[in-house]
Image (cartoon, rainbow, N blue to C red; front, side, top):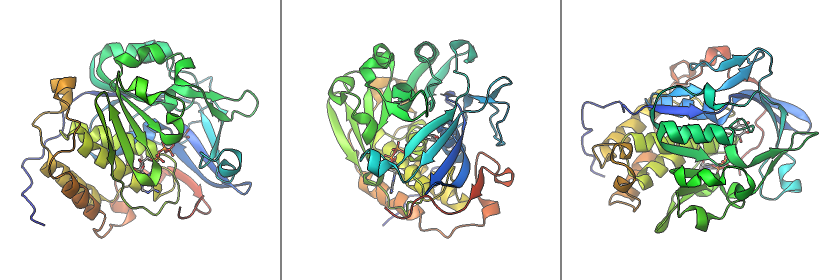
Length: 364
Ligand SMILES: Nc1ncnc2c1ncn2[C@@H]1O[C@H](COP(=O)(O)OP(=O)(O)OP(=O)(O)O)[C@@H](O)[C@H]1O
Ligand SMILES: O[C@H]1[C@H](O)[C@@H](O)[C@H](O)[C@@H](O)[C@H]1O
């Protein structure tokens, strides 16, 4: 394969970004025992990928007095509340519901994020990425007012929580209280399980819908078309946060000037890197540099689509898309560096994985 030189200098995107969603504590359980405790929340996984891709952002997140992980982007600490906690049971999903890889229970819940908690300024784009019901309809409404484009993870909209045990259930998007805001949303991301709770044919008339399919990659639906985006290989040990890292990689790719199909490949790549580790992944620095070089080489447009508006977005696969997939896949072949050399948004020394006894699930 002939490689073209990397355009120099590598520019850091200048778009202003707002991430909204609470950090949480994740407890992974298998066979009745705790196998790992980690920092969680879509906001933490996305921050991690954005930092890896040099995308700067503002974060609005709430935690309680007991929040136990050091993070680079400080959350709002609520002295009268506890941090949201999820218990993920890895051996119940297949028996109780064939669509789930795990059963999630929200066992503590922090305060919701109110419109007044959001910064009093405008952003090029925002990401509504709640996990425990913390994003209210009025909060999303404020986001679409202050951001030029808004990306939404459907899990922020359709989760409901059993009163006694906190078991996460999903409700139809139409019944969620957010449906009227969809025409003002640019991208809606759903896992294949969550996509069953929406009418994709209807929603794609308003916004671009991205459905992730685990090891099979993802699909992008827009008003006039759809396409499948190929996955990358991975040895899955923990699926937690794959969808969040996918979204971080996808949006990071768009910010760096990639067109939608190429950006979705970057999303698939970060999803595959995440399932290979327990909890928040740490990325090898050499691997990250290779990924950034490939993205820089691939950039087909001079500006990010946020600057040109919706009409400048290109949805069809451009020439060289398959080669871009191959070159991203080859970035995984670099020798890895030591743990000290690895990047992460959250300092590892203070322990974003607090305890690991054994991986929650091996292989597929
Ligand atoms: N086993 C795997 N092998 C390779 N890639 C994977 C695997 N699992 C997930 N991915 C990548 O990550 C993306 C998101 O995964 P998935 O569809 O499981 O999201 P999700 O169910 O929202 O995840 P979670 O709720 O655990 O964050 C997929 O589209 C794919 O690109
Ligand atoms: O940390 C995880 C992660 O953010 C997942 O995407 C979400 O589904 C879980 O609720 C959360 O505990």
